[in-house]
Length: 448
Ligand code: ATP
Image (tube, rainbow, N blue to C red; front, side, top):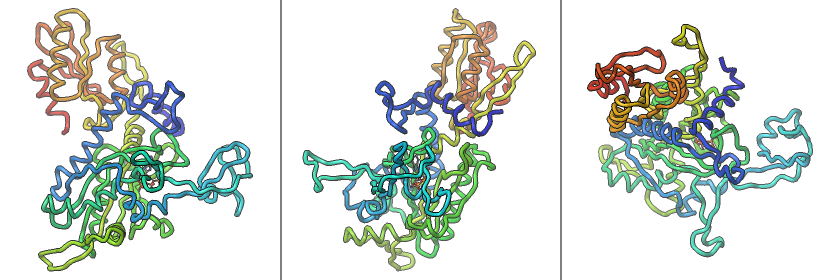
């Protein structure tokens, strides 16, 4: 069993060795908290986003999609309060020069009024400075105040300001939602473990517009729905909990907010927030833009500014949680009657980067031709791997540790009985399957 403390290192080693995650700009020494998603990581991330989109947009009918620009008029961020709220007071340790948010040090203070550096335990700091959490850039040739833009820190604001246009174009009545997946940027002072907290990451966010007065019920519904999604995709119930935001956290402009927390190796931490933002955002944009953002409810002959329920989830942080939760190191029986250590990612097959791998027992004909043909057939439907290098046991282990649900072995009988052996990842049970039935066999077993 891998100890909890060790789990993060073990998963980091696996993720980097197998190309799920690659340190960004590595040949230039890397960039702090910056990661590239490698070939298998891209697939895992795409599958996670597809699972969210499938459940949140495709199967509901009361949610539509949006892919808004990252660069928006700066007044959006002034109206939303981000420009004002997104500064953090940062202090620097005079001994080791590490920088920390003042709030964090005050929270972790060993005694009232005493700040202590978490890196070197020093207690002397340079004067606090205000640091903006928003990345600034400039549009056009002049780098002056008039040309300044912010990189977005969340996708939700575009859902709010586009809502009248989206509602009219999609002819939706309230309640209805706008879902979005996209990159956001935050100049975080403290970054951490792998992709848990980085400067750029993807968000999956929903702005769900409801009539005031129905908001509390909708908020409850969305908390339940979002927790259910994490369970359904395989996060263990004991690794998840709900945490109600305290009164002092209501700076995020919410009437109520509930976090879905995951038990990371370093403790419980936020995976997602489901907030009832009331009409704060829309009222602010109405005031600042001068546009009427109210909704006319024909059935009730009433006009009001909708309340907004917002489930907001970080894709990268969520992938990390699924990787940690899926990681298993166990003893498995060998063909020779002994046991050996096997690492297996028990990812839900919907998330698995590769759905199947074709493994010919020999590189000689006619096995090779059949294996190539089967790989090509499977690739018409799914991401499928092909591996003809090394012993079959090693090839199984390579697939297990990246969570491939099915291995298809083409052996010396396959040419004559036109059948292959299919091995299931978790049970390691094997089935002999006719090559003509292989696609149908996998189709019956791989959830959509
Ligand atoms: P935290 O308390 O961790 O700083 P936050 O309150 O800033 O999070 P939100 O603004 O609610 O987070 O963002 C929505 C989600 O985006 C979070 O629940 C988390 O999953 C993810 N997220 C937030 N900040 C980061 C980051 N710097 N890197 C990776 N993911 C992040």
